[in-house]
Image (cartoon, rainbow over all chains, first blue to last red; front, side):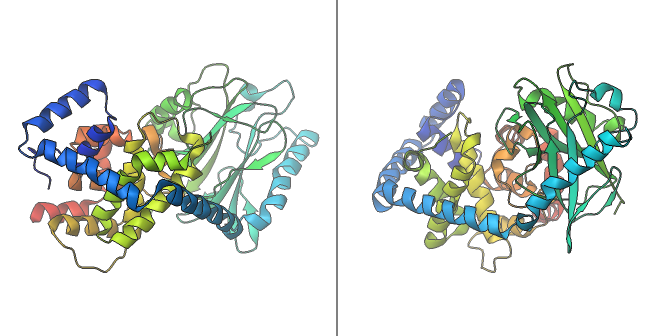
Length: 264
Length: 159
C-alpha cells in the first residue's frame, strides 16, 4: 500500500500537469516540498516526460492511434451480431406503431397501463421504445413485461415521434441506473425526428434481480443529462422503481419499458 | 468534437504510459496498451468536455490494463502487483455492458467497474473520498462497489 506520507504517483502526475483545483494544487505542492525526495521525484517525472516523447514521437503515435481507431471501427461494425439485422429491425416498431394507430389505442410497447394520457402529442403519437433480444434466428421483438435473463443481449431502438432531444437509460432491481444513449457527455442526444433508430450498442443484461426498466425521456429543447438522471437515481432506489413515473418538469415526455427478471 | 490526438498524446502520453507500465510490468505491452487508451479517447471524442482529462485517462488506462491482465498467468513481482493481479482476475459485478468505454461512467451516471475502484483505492492509495470524486460516486457507493470484490478484500484483510 502507498505510504500516507509520500505523495502517491497519481497525485504527482496531477501536480505535474497542474490538473487539480487551485486550492488542492497548492496543498499538494506544499505537501510535496515537505517530502525529502518530493521535488526530485517531480523533476525526474518531468525529465522522463521529455525522454518518452523523444523515444515515442507524438506524430508517430498519433498516426498509429488513428490507424487502430479506423481498424477497430470497421471490425466492431462488421462483428456486431446486429449489423445484418439492422435494416429489418428498423421496420418492426414502425409497422407496430402503424398497426396501433390504425387498429386500436391499446398498450403500446414502452407504455405503462394508464400512461397514455400524459403521453399524448399533437402529432398523435408518443415517443416509442422498442426492445429486441438477440436470438439465433435474429432479433426477437420483446413485449412490455417480457421475461428476460442474465446474459440476454438486448438491442434498444427509439422512435422520437418529432421530439428533438432525448436520453435512454435503465434502472434495475438493484437500484442501479445505467445510461445507454448518449454513451457519455453532459447533454441529451439530438434525436432523429422520424423513423426507428437502433442505439449504437446492444446491451447484455447482468445479474440484477427482479426487473430492468428502460426509460426514454424526450424534450423539444436541449437539456442536461443530470436534469433527468438525478431523478432516475432517486427513483431507482425507491419502492416505485418498477412502475412509478419519473418526477420531471412538464417539458419532458417519458416512456418506459420493463423486462421482468427471475431472481437468481 | 474533433480531437488532436497528437496534442493529447504530447500532454498525457507519458502519464498514460507510466500507468500502463506500472500495471502491466512489461514495456512492450505497456506501449501497446497506451496506444489503445488513446484509441478509446478518439472513439469517445464527442464526450471530451471533461476539464481535466488526466483523471479520465488514468481510469481508461486502468481499465485497459485490468482487462489485459484478466486471466494473465504471470508471477507477481511484489505485494502490490499481486493485489493488482487478484483484482484483475476477480469477478466484477460492476461491468455491465460489452465494449463500452469509461466515458459513459462519468459523474456516477452508470456503475463504475468495481475493479477500477478497487485499484484506485487499494493500489493507488486514494482515500474513499478521493476515489468517490474520481469516479463520480458517493462514498457509500464506492464502499458498496468495493464489497462486490469481497474475496479480494477478505484476502487483503487476512494478510
